[in-house]
Length: 335
Length: 198
Image (cartoon, rainbow over all chains, first blue to last red; front, side):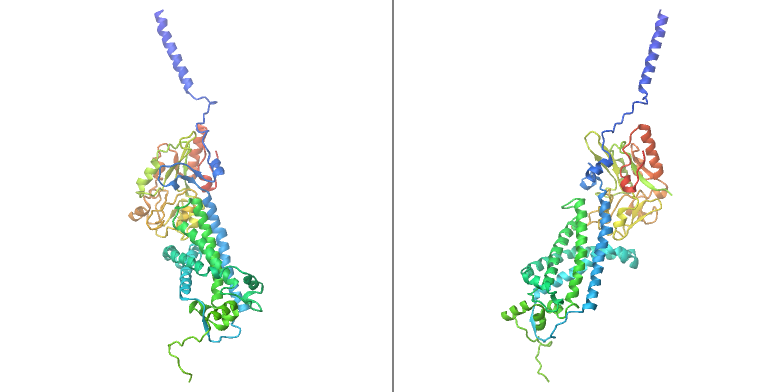
């Protein structure tokens, strides 16, 4: 009997061992998926268009795992925006050249009388030219960021192009302040002369300064009022989005930054196109216009022709056209 | 030639951050620059999942497309690198990158960004391979020594794979077949317009 018991223990022990071994081996039918509850990437992207989680870094931006929207931003920026902006600017240059050769500059009908009257004061001219110089540098440095790679880089090579782009970036950031100040002052200085009125409707219907019969206008005609509002509203938009871009992620997340960039770039490109027309009209496009903003005075006949309402009021106030003082300050008798 | 990619097996990643530490140490990455990071989705909830993310070295890299000074280039191994000498710190590459790879040191006033820094797939930069000049700017160049990125080498669970696209996709596929589950190659569709067929 003892003999049997000894073997029994062995047999039972062996049987237990074999059973345990069989139980431990995974059977083909029992596949546990421990991550069945977990989210999938496609699911997250469909829901929220980005994948955000938690991370151990203080920079909250690092917790975004994926934002495929960056690809869309790239598409808009490199595609639509460059085409629209580029065509707007080139188109405007073409329009201006066509105007010059087909219509020709607008002349002072009855010629200059030689007598001049005050049009813009020193402060107004200072603000205008400060904004102008800032705008030109801002525009060039901005255009360089969008188009420089294609147009300038092949010409001057990478090192020189990087140097120009870097200094352009610094200029763009710093000159934004005097430019914004200029836009604000322009807005305040001239707001009362740029409110739309019935005279503007009349002026536009009669073809403005290009029409047969020059319609009357006050200090600013309807064309100039349009430029004013482009400058003020466009300037406000580029300044606001510009400061958002210059202080990255201070007020908004990446989506806001992408939108701010597209708005800034698009408005700026259209702004440049509009200013090209303004520069044309203010220089070669209209005889006698430039000196109003440069010297501050305009010829009598220019005033009567282009801004008759303004002319009448100014003469009534005592701002009569007079002969300009001779350059050396001493009146010479006629020989 | 090889087409280098990263693949993070989100089912194996345990958020140990060994990859982050390895990268930081190997390249002496300064404070505030996060070349590699681990992001945990649904943290603390059932179905929590962690993914290690750095630069994915995309096909048709959006960072390269939007750079105003063209400072990016793609090597023969399809690694996307850039030149810090040409970079002007404009920040556009960060807006374009779907993965948030570009990092900038805060050096100037306003929000001024310094030169962009990012994961180089341990392949250095335009300077001559394994020189001090290259190390100071871009970190170690392991690829030139015939080695793979250190983050993947140091991964404690071998969830982060780095290397030739075919090889790592194959490894991942075998894993998925053997264990019976896999959440896919995170980021591959966005980066490479393809995914690992499981």
